Figure 1: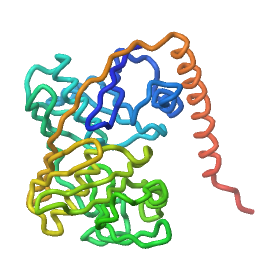
Figure 2: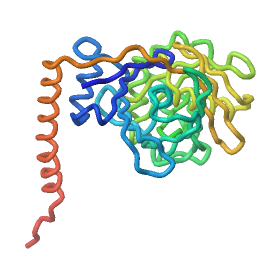
Figure 3: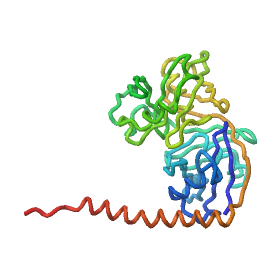
Figure 4: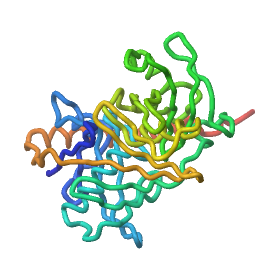
Amino acid sequence: MRLEKWHALGNDYLLVERERWPLPLTPAVVRMLCDRHEGVGSDGIVLIEASQEPGIVARLRIFNPDGSEAELSGNGVRQALIYLRRRGHVTHDSFSVATGKGEVRARITGPDTCVMDIGRVRLVSDSFPNGPRDGRGEVEAAGRRWRFQFVDVGNPQCSIEVGEELEALDLQAIGPAIEHSELFPKRTNVSFWRALDERTIRARIWERGVGETRSSGTGATGAAVAAVLRGMESPVRVVLDGGELEVEVGEDMHVNLRGWARPLFAAELDGDFVERLRAAADRDQAVAPRAGELQRDQHKEVPTE
């Protein structure tokens, strides 16, 4: 069983091709693989599947290290895009892939760089169901209220502008309460940012199902969109702990994300570890049908007398 580990600005993912990966990526399997002490270690997994859809090179599924599945990851998808081009799965520099968010169009611009057209972002979605049309709101965490800009980038983003306190913020104390706030029924990613100049922001990211990360493509996008809505010129340079990304925000809220990604290593998993993964997958699959049956039982109509 073979996989590769890549990273983009320190945000690392395991890239797995379905044809070389016979095990289902159940929550327990994902958690074991992403574990940094007893697994391979990563911020998530991108599963690359063949696509029969015209114009789509591959279908990507993105898994968080807690076992949940994400609609989109800017860094994870960018790693997969450059992987597909470098490994010869596509022979031209412009192509499309399918994600949980929908189609993402890519243009390879160098050996380790590309531009991702991720479409139009929205300020209204079912990820913030009671939000106003401008996507603005307030949320409580760590004993204070935070004003935020909601942006749906294909996944939910809660972007919070702060001042000089940005570097001193304890995201471990603030992030979980916002991620799990009742305002966001699907949970949310959170970006804290401040303007450095007329076209540059500094951002720190709390990622849903991950925690604080060195970078996040969609988190950077959410922060950049929030900055543009407050008058900043596009494109916006976003300075993250792991490096810089460029986000171009059009007048129609259409977004292009530019950045890099690089491989770290390829690996064949040890047979003993594979057997433990297989056992974990079997346990998950044995539990899933029972959970479904229980849920159906709970929704059965009760006869009335």
